[in-house]
Length: 433
Image (cartoon, rainbow, N blue to C red; front, side):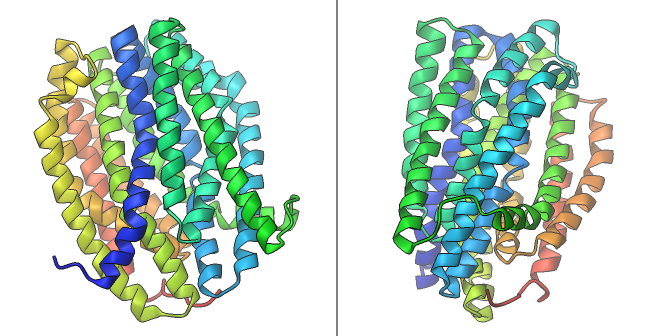
């Protein structure tokens, strides 16, 4: 596939975004590796349950990044730079408010939330510990989402890469120190992640404050703008709820299959998440390029960029599939998996790999439609694809985790159909600021 000027623009945004996105699942992968070596299979399973809850809470608020990217990019394409930065400041305030609300609501309910997964008592106790400590970092995690969205909308994916790399390195060092040296148990893993995320959020706040002052944009809360940001993100929230329902159902089914199956599924899920974020780098470029091009009124450029990014998604998915298959024999050793977990993990990595090309197209088209502001369609598509997944998951619940992963494959195929159908039409190509 020859490299064109359009490819260079995609790569300019996607390559740094790749590094930043991969850093997010690496936070949990580092936790899994350190906890696996220092605390054993029970703690890994507990981390899987608590990590799923925490990831669900944060991902429900992903509109703080995606919605902000689309709105800032569209205003930037239209030449409205002060409005673009105003959207960013409003997003930061909304992130802080939602983070505080999540702490207040989820902290007292942590034992009940963990019990929904049916974990063994020892696993449940450790999962509650990890979840409650990690909740303290929720406002910082959401500020990171909003700040990342601002910079992506401004066509800057390099700064998020630098922040993510620094946060990941700090997270790994702190977790190793707290768990392996100070012997703080699973609580040490949670505290390391909280501290790393808080420092990353502080960097984003500093960058946004500097940009706002340069453009003369007030930093005080703007209630109307915050409400508008929350309203605009509602459809993306519905879409994200549907995504998380699918993953939560899968985790609940895996939990009831046994401790070895749960540990293997938890590790495979983190591998899949890392691959998903890697593929999502092209989708991030799609959000920024689509929003800017439609803001400038250039439909032809939007279509051409979409076609090219889909091609990149297919090829990237194929490469990642080959990498997973090549690394498959080595992965159990990375997590110090016992023989039972190793057997389950080696089996489930096959479907994890084989669905990657489909994932590549799905993530790209999802990003393009988010960048276009087509949130209402994405919400309805999320509902229909979830309904397609649930019967397949029910069938898999009486089998094994390979069947469970194939049910997730059914879900990805359903997403491919709904997104491709929309992208080939023209209803989403709305131009202007």
